[in-house]
Length: 632
Image: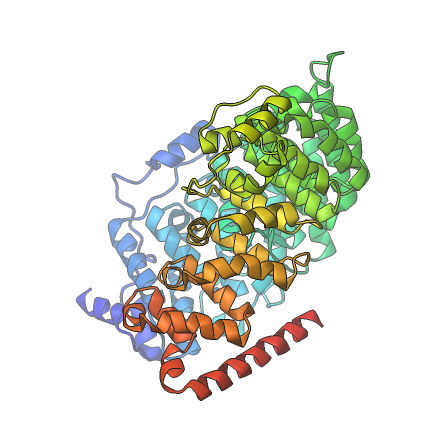
C-alpha cells in the first residue's frame, strides 16, 4: 500500500501509472464487508426502515475501501498532465465502483467522492451507476448521503443529454449493457409517482422530487441562499432544452398534487415540493400552473367557512401555508391575482400587515402587483395604517410599497405624505426637511430629537413657533430598510422631499451615511436617478467632498468616493486629488486608502500633472464610449 500512496498523491502520472493505481490494489473489487458490519444497517438506514424505505440492510464499506476512495478524492483535486490522463484515471475508478454502487452511495465520505466522479463521468459511466441504484431507488433517495448522489447524477443531464450512452473508450471495461439516461430518469419518475406523498414527506425524498422537477422542465433554480449571496436575487440559475417526453412526465407528476392538496398545503416538508413545482410550471406550462393555483386556493377557501371574512385568512397566518400562498401570489397571472386580492385580501390588509407571519404574504402581494388600479386600492387601504405597521417593525411592507410606487409610477405623492405623517414630520412644514434622518434611523420626530409629543396639529404649530427645535442632533446609525426606503424615494418622479432633506444634512451626517454599508447605496441612487439633475446632485456631493480623506480610508466610503470620482468633472477631480495628496503617505499606507491612491493615479498627479490630465481625459472618453455601447 505504501507504493500505492506515492502513486495516488503524485502530481504527474503517465497512462501506465494511472492504470496501476487501480489494478495493483482494487479494494472495491475485493470489498470484504466486515462480519460485524454485514447485515447491519447504518443509523440513517434504520430510521428509513421504519418508514419502509428498504427491505434489506444497506451494506457498509470496510475501512480499507473508505481509505481508498478518500485517496481517489484527493487525487481528483490534483492537476493531471492531460485530459486523457484524467479520463483514464476516472475510467479505472469507475471500473472499481461497479458492483458496489449502493454501499458507496450511502457511505458519508465515499458518497462525496462518488459525487465528484459523477460530475466528470461520461454518459455510459453515469448510466452504469444509476442502473445499479435503480433497483433500490427508495433506499438511496431517502438516505442523507444517497440523496446527494442521486441529485448530482440528475444534474449531469444537461451536460450529457447529447452524449452517446456507449463510449468507445469503455470497450475494454467490464461494463454490462444498461438503460439509457432518459430511461433511468423515467424509471425514477415511475418510482416517485407510485409513492408520491411518501417521497414528498421525506426530508431527503422531497429533495429528490424537487431536483427531478427541475431536470424534467429544463429549468435549474437558485436556492434561497444562492439568491441572497451570489445570484443577485435571480430565481433561475440555468435553462436547457429537454425532450417533450420530459415535459409530459413533469405534468404527470404534478397532477398527483390534485388529490392531496390539503396535505401539501399544510405539511412543512411536502409543501416545498409544490412550491418548486409552481415555479417550474409557470415557466414551462403556465396553464397547468394556473390550474394548480386555483385548486389550492379553492381548497383552502372551503375550510372553516366564515360569513365575516375569507377562510383563507387562517392559512395566511400559518407559517407553512403562508409560504405556499406567497409562491402562488408570485406565479399568478394578472387576472388571477386581481381575483385573489378582491376576494381574500381587500379590507384585511392592515390587520394582515401587522401580523408576524401574514405580513410576509402581504409583501409578496405588493411586489407581485401588476396593475395601477389594484395598487391604488392597496395604497388607499394601507396608507392610514403605516405608523401601526412601523410600530410592529414590519418595514418590508413599507419598502415594498415604495418599490411598487417607483415601478408602477403611481401614488408616489400619496406615499410620501403618508410617510411624513407616520414619522410625525408633516406638520409644521419646517419639519419635513428632517425626513431623511428620521427614515434612516426609523424614529419619529419626537423620539429622534427627544421632545414631548403634542396631541394635535395646532399644538405642534404653536410649539414650533414658540420653541424652535434644535435640529443639530448627529445621526448615529443607518437602518438597512430605512436606507432602502430613501433610495426608492430618490427615484420617484418628484424626488425633492428626500433630496432637499439630504441636502440639508450636515457634512458629518452625510459622512456617517457614506461610511455605512447600507447607507452608502443612497449615493448610488443619487447618482443613478433619472429624475435628479447634475446641479441638484452637486449640492449634496459638495459637502461630502470635504471629507475625501475619511471616505478614502473607509471600506464603504471609498466605494462612494470612487462613484463620485467617476461622475465628476476635471475641476472637481483636481480638487479631490489635491486634498488627498496632502496626506499621500498616510493614504498609501492605509489598508483601504492605497487602492484609492492607485485608482486616482495620485503619484502622477504630484509628479507628472500633464500625463495625469491626459489619462483622466482618456478615461472619461472610454467610460462614455462604453456607456453608449450599453445603451445601444
